[in-house]
Image (cartoon, rainbow, N blue to C red; front, top):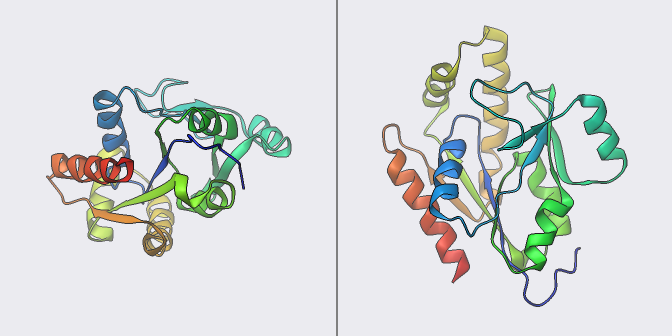
Length: 196
């Protein structure tokens, strides 16, 4: 367990299945709360259209990612959908927490437990964003880009696994189709409650 000091800030984790609105919520929180810290994580997946290296993700090779794992540089990391690595570097989180700042981080559900082993419970809260079922999620995923049937099945399997994690989170928020402003407001409200 990390000793963050007396004045340590809060780490707010945003979790949930792909397509649940995490990216949209985080984008809005960045604009509304410039005082929050939004660490850039690393991934081995290819950038999507419009994504720039260093904004939300540092796009790295699998070899580089694996070397950083070996050096113990990640606070958490996971292999998602059976192929791509995602991870959060320790210092990107620990330094602002020690400074008493609020850190907002999207993590894969696989990373939640490893973070809980390192960050004291008093400095950590988790918010799980979800949808009302696979059909809604599949529609959202296919709006972003066409995917082969095998990839959709892999995502469905991941969704079913990820849904089991919602009970481990402090707050669960359901993203209703067409109500993105409510999702943003509910998430923002949950964060503000944690900071009181």
